Image (cartoon, rainbow, N blue to C red; front, top):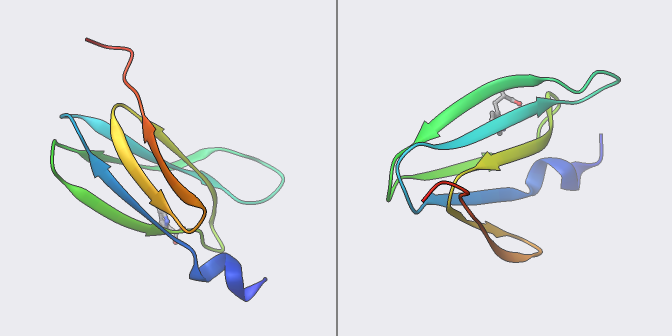
Length: 77
Ligand code: TRP
């Protein structure tokens, strides 16, 4: 696999409690394989890997990527 795929990190900072960072599988089936709960202020640093092709974030978080920064929003509250 492309070396760059493995180099890219995402930094996810939860802006509220119970933000979910969900890893989705690589390959012909796209399924959830991991869900990590972050509380306000917690940070997760994650990479795309052989097993992870997409990352879904639920809740309000700041996401820093090599392509820029974005904030996910919460529909709650
Ligand atoms: N075992 C997973 C993997 O190597 C761990 C993982 C990597 C992960 N990046 C992730 C889990 C992003 C959730 C979100 O692919």
